Length: 421
Image (tube, rainbow, N blue to C red; front, side, top):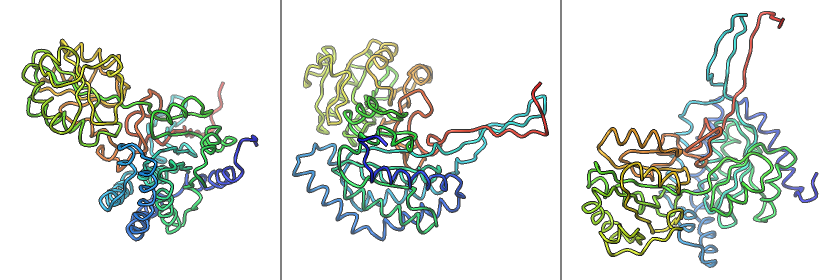
């Protein structure tokens, strides 16, 4: 055992590994029972969960935590109800474990079957997001994976209260409560221990939080990492856009919840429509309380905005700020996204099928949309119930990571006595 590893954490991971082996072959009905029982536990312990969250919120306010993190940290009855609804959706989804991906038979009579299997044991490291405790727990449970949860210090009490609900769900279903574990303290050193893989007990790490956390995980982890670094999302208003849609979508994409990774950070407008469209969109954004930073061409059309600097095009504001640029055409818009985007989510506003097809085909981001707000880049909105995060890499999983994204596969081969010549 490495000297830097925490003995208590290592013991938790060892118990987790054993529990994950049981969970991997648990029947669908038993897993669903645990998920539904978790939702029931959240409703039963609502007052205790909200009290724990209030304790976290007071501490965060004393530390003057930024507004976007406070928004993510806060729980109320509506958000708890949304958690329960997400759990019910996850329980109703098809179980990916043992699902056949494809099957075939070769000339020698061997029958091949590629099936989905759990990855094994995951570690989820997250900040100021107590809802991730439930989302990650439910998705890992349904996909047959054990999980070690490491929430941020800001959400310590909220996460532990929700973790107790997950454990109650496992207990009701007769599954090992060790299958969903949580780190025992807020000690920052625990993150470093987890990044080592804990002597091979952790298979994959999924970070969900701010840029500094994710950058650290990606730089220091000694095992595979699934996640994204930035959410630099774009809205492109094409020359064939319907103005009413363009205004409504742009405002929603930026201002519904400015502090989440799917919030639009840059607005691109086709030069042909800009003289008409930009004043309407910019005015609506300003009225909603958004700070505007525009290129010189944009400021000539709508003067009430700050001058955008080069760094603005690659900035994830996570705040009511948006950068605005006039582009020559759709090719220029796609080139801008390719240069400055983070591969997260982009949306084109257009009534032209030709323009939409080009954008959806050629823009290489995890999620591309037509005539829809980037704020739909969420597992719940995809019908996944919830998500464990957004993946922007090109390996294994991409976009909202839900049940299928938490599985790998293996090959089953059945023969009748064949030997290889």
